[in-house]
Image (cartoon, rainbow, N blue to C red; front, side, top):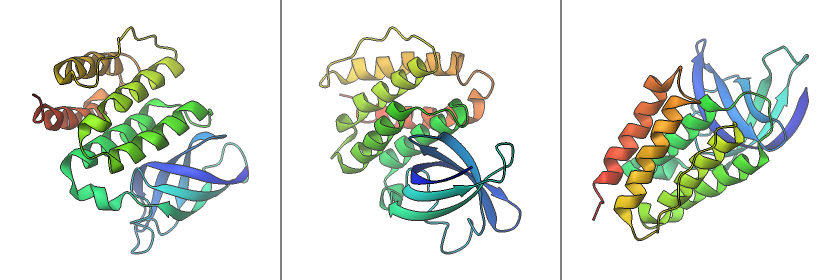
Length: 201
């Protein structure tokens, strides 16, 4: 296994003293977990922020071996981590992706949708600019995993209907792809829901 490709950082977990296991979403290889030496160090820690776009070089001697990865920053989402609502949204959608998707199965539509969603979260003047794309991403993820979700698309101006759809889709996520691990991951969505509620009306 050896490839070089753009990727979205979805999660990192500490490994040993200075390394991390990074979960990277790519177009052709899907979600890939890889060992990144020095990932918690001064130079790579700001590169491996969930939501960041990176160029990843991934190598493994066999399909069964945990790959090693080198990453280079392409686009940072760090500036939005100090903004509570964008930070909560990026944290949720990357955690959902890292948890729900099986590894090494390509989902090119999800990659493109996540890339566009994170960009929208960062550039939109308010959550009203990205709330519907976030719901669309969740529905797309559910459908790509084989779960049909009969949720109508609310009007962008109807904030109560958007929050209602958010709650209904959340129940589907907790019931299906996150059923065995929803406690940890859904906490990120609960935080986002609380922050979205503050702009109701």
